[in-house]
Image (tube, rainbow, N blue to C red):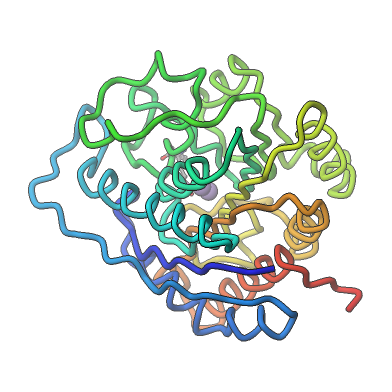
Length: 306
Ligand SMILES: N[C@](CCCC[B-](O)(O)O)(CCN1CCC(O)CC1)C(=O)O
Ligand SMILES: [Mn+2]
Ligand SMILES: [Mn+2]
């Protein structure tokens, strides 16, 4: 595995400060050294510098459209570059609005379509018209899905975004805090969802087997894994902005990435929503960061069997 680390210290997709510190706290837990120790080559592209956007008034309900639009345009280019230089892009967030740029840049760098595995307590599929908060980190997927574009009003700062994912190529794992409008959208688009109910009912091994059968039932496509740390139970990863009880265990969280790694189709990874300022103790921050690192090591070949 050749990994291209891209730090995206960005927080304007949501209101809580601190998530912009995610890239550096994950790095300081030894991510690069641990990847090298398991046989990966690593190129760290450093942290992107995101410009301040003065004014930046909401467009309708959508908050900070200027900051979110320009950060993601810059990120898209960085992910495109890392991918075309032969690395598997590993984007460290920052909030989940960054999936817009990460998926966009990834899609632009590969021929044909990609599939998306979205591991999260939340669906992040509100449109600008359904969002209850206006925070773009809860809307990211709505700007990317081809079949949803007739429902997306014009946001000038997002005009560069070309929808690049088909609803049939998406699988959600870990959902347990889905807004009513998001639930309607998921049903309307027929998107495959393994909520925590399915994780409990089927067990994670069966969930991953069915995820792969579903995604590969037609053409095998490269996988974009967008992993929100709040998919894991907040008792284990409390340092995050929108915790929701009843999440994945450490073992389930790592099983997901071990399984995806062994498909050989993992093509880009996001690890987002680690917010060191949301932990009440240093131990809480450390637990969150250490689990984030182990999840990522699973993506790139670490096996618990040694
Ligand atoms: N669906 C939420 C949360 C998005 C979380 C983004 B993340 O990247 O962390 O997945 C709203 C959540 N909901 C709002 C009303 C409250 O009573 C309950 C939480 C939204 O703001 O759209
Ligand atoms: Mn998310
Ligand atoms: Mn989430």
